[in-house]
Image (cartoon, rainbow, N blue to C red; front, side):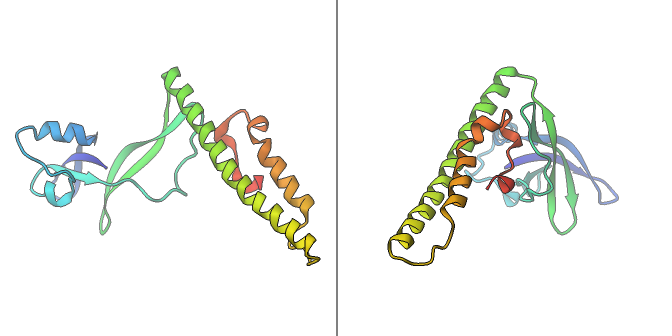
Length: 170
């Protein structure tokens, strides 16, 4: 959860005075006030501060890259919805941070790949069982093997982990 300091204008529009604020920064601004563990809109009622939840609409988000990360860059008030974050790609200028991001992304990709391969292993076992029992096989083993090989090669076939398109991979 992020927070913002806003001001309501006479024409019922809002002006964003500070954005984004972390919980730590918000608590520092209320240093002489005891805030509950979970800060929400009700806690902030009557102050200039508002709680801004993370966006849940991923399809409209730009794609992150090695050199750019997705970050909250703006804030708008949507009638009936409340405060909504706007996102954009922000250049990563710290090379150490960029390197760590790529390392974490590759680890995430390997984990996802391993999960998909475990599912494919189950498909292979099903094929073998159906073959042993003389049943009509559900899937051709050659197709399963080809998909598994694509998964096995994913870390070798892509230089940029942010360019992997899982939908077209398997």
